[in-house]
Length: 506
Ligand SMILES: O=P(O)(O)OC[C@H]1O[C@H](OP(=O)(O)OP(=O)(O)O)[C@H](O)[C@@H]1O
Ligand SMILES: NC(=O)CC[C@H](N)C(=O)O
Ligand SMILES: [Mg+2]
Image 1: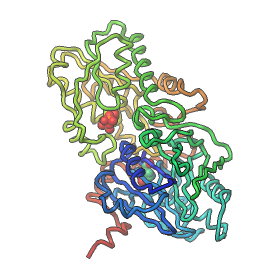
Image 2: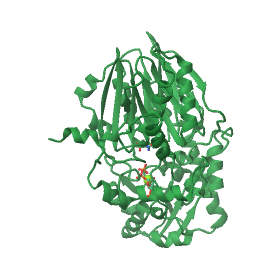
Image 3: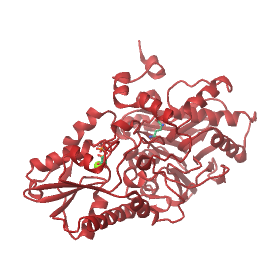
Image 4: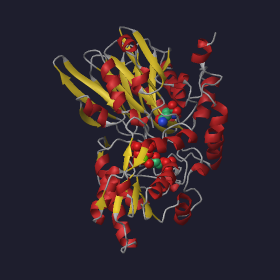
């Protein structure tokens, strides 16, 4: 899950895009980029690193113009090289750039077709470069010197016909404006907002509404699944449904972990959905463990705080902040590689002894994926003198790979894969263990918007809503992206197709 942003302003957009990306930083910490448009020229700055490290004051001055797009990356395909940072750019037709959140599940097949039939070369191993080239091909096929909005929407319809998987993207077309579109299942989030200024209306498209909030934009609405929104250079908004049979089935893991709690996603407050997850879990504890001896509920910061709060309220047990988080360390789960994830838990979280000594504690996390956090945290709680250490997860066991934009490619890396709850409890070393039921998780989110037809719950139930995921696909994904494979392949960074590095070499 990367973060994307796009804007057509009445004045320079560089600072707003930068600020918006810092607010979306929780969606990707590996690379960042901005591309702007000014009087027929495009300006690009992208590199590996956090937003604050990628853009110097000088870079910002060079990002000229009132129109632009931006991206923060958490890779799910390709490699970690800076050549795969986004936005991507292709010069024909018109000069198009694109930033993508999600993952294409038929990337290999499209790449072949792009080469053999459309005579297009893909220079990286990123699926986002493929998505851009499909769009460029569809637009180029019209063979027009000038296109109009309906041509642009027609090209998005072409993307929906050719691409499978999850994609929420923004694109900038040189001389035309900024486009946002979402896959026909609406797996990854995308919304847009407006801000009225003395000189006219400005529009912004973003992965999460929190980016609009912070910049003073009013949320207009979510982009519908399959829909495209286009803001032309005069700041006029055009929208059109571009898919044949769209249906809203957003990724439920956005609500569990990925999104910021102060965002609205598909009309559901992420914060309120997490409070409800906590209440649901409290009720399960009351049902199945009425005579519990929990003295204190302690969240594992940051994400689980919200659900732990209402879990404690509903259980009528004291809530305490027992771990203090180092605010200068990012999110562990989206770090590349198990070694760095392992190290960062200790550096990031430190216990307050008095909240643990001689107490029976219930540690609450939003989810357990590889078990990196839970194993170390339980050990810390014990070393700090806790009597009993119980563990609760506000999401069900994560047992299956994600193929739509979350980097969980290998089932065998998932703690819960092939294990029952008792087996998981033993591995993480807890005295007791409780997981949310999937049905309750769905209820907790859907209560915010009962128009949501379904969710992508694939990492919990192994059902892939795009219908194209076979056992062979999952095996190939694992062979390509499992931790140790990537470690061996990438070691440092870069790969043979890394143009940026080739050029930089003496
Ligand atoms: O089982 P694991 O593989 O450890 O993954 C799950 C953990 O990772 C995430 O925390 P993270 O540190 O990424 O972010 P947070 O500070 O937002 O909670 C999540 O909130 C869990 O704590
Ligand atoms: N997490 C994402 O959305 C990743 C986008 C794209 N697949 C990449 O790897 O760069
Ligand atoms: Mg966490």
